[in-house]
Length: 312
Image (tube, rainbow, N blue to C red; front, side, top):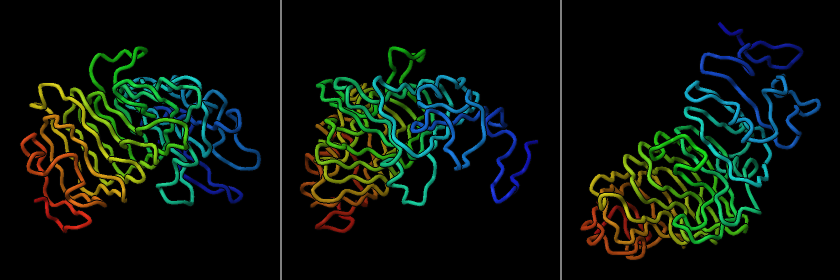
């Protein structure tokens, strides 16, 4: 059993498994601003250098698939020159909690790039949990993901052979920082994916989230979209959307002028429910609600600037 948390000279001592083997795998630490070392006179887990790293990718590389490893990321953003690959299954990446609102954690602790003008800043290809991290990119390319800071899909360096599954993004932030990317998150397929309480905010965003391909059991809920054109854009889905099961809601919010969903008239099976779109019902989507339902988007219980819970 790990030692319990205790106090010594006013400093909280962590359980014995912190920084080593624990009941849920190993624990690693990232401190991008201090070369991997703890800050002077600021206790932040007394661990060996082989468990504390100055880059997130190095910490991910130290993880083992399905061991349940956890990476704690200390406040401070990391400039990357190559795409960060979340390619270890079953890891947790959690940003240091600070005395600020969850929506701002990713503003102060992000991975960002100024040099990757034709690639995303990060790719997720394996099931994982990410909390509080910011993603900012400089991708101005014209590939399907249209300049995404974060991409969910199988990457060339991954051993995965299927679309990403089991990904959970919680309280992550996607600001643009005027670096060039035009979408926060892009998904090239994926199953059993949960995106919740995330924040997408930049005037350059044509949409906060883009989704296409073999996607199923994907839920986007309680997310916040502002300044951009659309919250969500849909591309072409596999099987003409026959097996695509999407849940857009509840609790997604847009702030004028950001609109709700750009379906592109791409057929799928989707529930659009319980959202608060900050525009009129006539402009919340790229087509009428009746036409959306023909394509498989069932709208129910959404709020609009000119209507209350009226999807007609």
